[in-house]
Amino acid sequence: MAKKQKVKKTLVEQILTKAKIEHIGLQINALEGILPEGIDRSTIFKTLALKGDKTGPVIGIIPITEHLSEKKLAKLSGNKKVAMIPQKDLEKTTGYIHGANNPVGIRQKHPFPIFIDESALQLETMIVSAGEIGHSIQIKPQLLADFVKATFADIME
Image 1 (cartoon, rainbow, N blue to C red):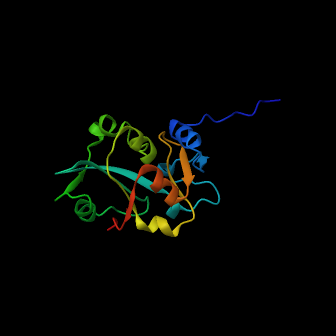
Image 2 (cartoon, helix red, strand yellow):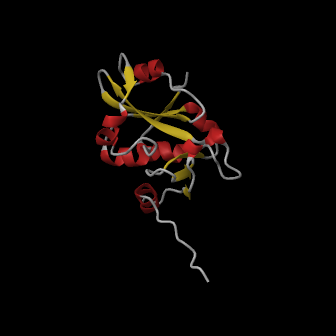
Image 3 (cartoon, one colour):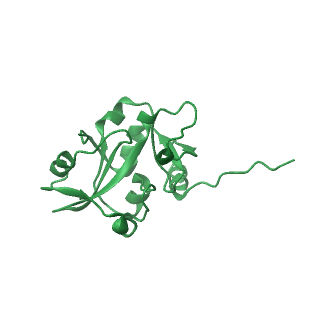
């Protein structure tokens, strides 16, 4: 009989487990568009890394189906303007490659301000990357915000 393959927890999942933060590890790659049954696209959030002209890096977390308002995020974060960090600079800034940025891992290494779109508050759970492509976590929005010291705000276009 074949042994059941145990999925290795990502570092993000290990951090949350150690901190006793309730979450569920998921094997999904939202970038490919194929979602397991029962997963609604509107509950999946992307973690965007931007650079402010005054404060440096700023993190914005919005549903994957939406667009970030750079103007709103700039104002909230005390910047005149913010711009996406170029992909070539992403890993050295956040520690993660494109598609694997996540608020838990970023917060462990950097004190960057993190803003989660307030639409997350209407959800029972939200899904964010677990720090590796194809791995995500499902977590209550308020639990995530409290753990990574994020602020809820209107940051979508």
